[in-house]
Length: 213
Image (cartoon, rainbow, N blue to C red; front, side, top):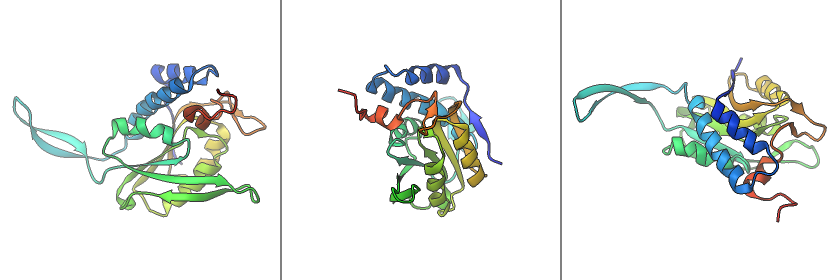
C-alpha cells in the first residue's frame, strides 16, 4: 500500500492557515502556494537514489553524494497544478516538466483528456505529479492512469490539501503511488468541495473568482 505523508511542519501549517482565509489576496495566495510547494518538495524527493562522486573543495579532495540517473519530471494537472510548478522548480531547477489536461465530460461526468505532453524517457525518471487539491480523486486517478503507461521509475502525488475520500480513491486505484500533502482535511461537502479546504484553488491562484474585481 502506498504511503500518505501529511507534512505537519510549523511553517507549512502556518502558511496554509493564511491560504485558507477567504480574505487572502490573489498575489498572497499565489506566493504561499509557491512557498508551501517548495517545502513539500523536500519530502516528495526523499526516495531519490544517490551516487558517490569525487569533488575537490577549497581544502581537499573528498567523496560526496549526488542524485543519480535522469532528471526528475514534474507533471502538472492543468490548470491549477501550474500554480505549484514554480515552487517545485525553485528546488529542482533542472527537472523536466509535463502537463496533463483533463475536463469533465458533460455526458458521462467522467474526466476527459484534452491535453497530454510529457518529457521523453519517462521510464528512466522519477515523476512528481502536482495538483493543489485532492478532492474526489477523479482527475488524479485519470492523470495517473495516463502516466503509468509511460512506465516511470516512481510516481509521487503532491497536493496542498486532500479529502479522505480522494485519498481513498487514489490509494484504491494506484497502490504504488505515494501521496505528500500539507493537510488531510475533514471531508467533502455535497458540492464536492474540501472542508475546510481552500475554495477553488485554481481560481484563487489565477485570480478568476467571479466576484473578484
